[in-house]
Length: 112
Image 1 (cartoon, rainbow, N blue to C red):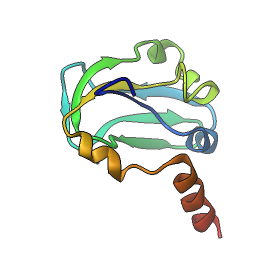
Image 2 (cartoon, helix red, strand yellow; image 1 turned 180 degrees about the horizontal axis):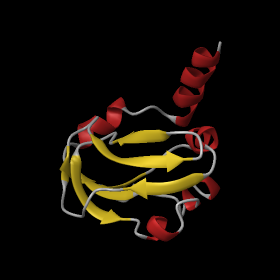
Image 3 (tube, rainbow, N blue to C red; image 1 turned 90 degrees about the horizontal axis):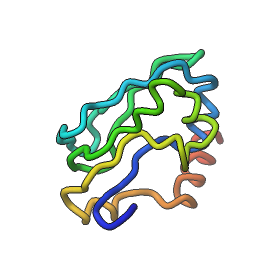
């Protein structure tokens, strides 16, 4: 996050569950997204998964490098594997996001 610019991707855990990523479909720059809305898909060797936006906002950037190298999502999900950058519409929505610890707790509870 840089001011109201938020970089969106998937977690390391999710990337690991997908396996090898073959293709990614992302929205066009300028599209306005509503929190929870599907903004694209990821096709892996195991499945095709929907990508949902965690926050409402306008897409300002798309990681076009992923068209040629979609496996960057798995290799570096928190760095070069980012998918879209959005200017968030409502900073209060940030309060609804899980922290890394909260995410780990949810995964642990799901696995149990």
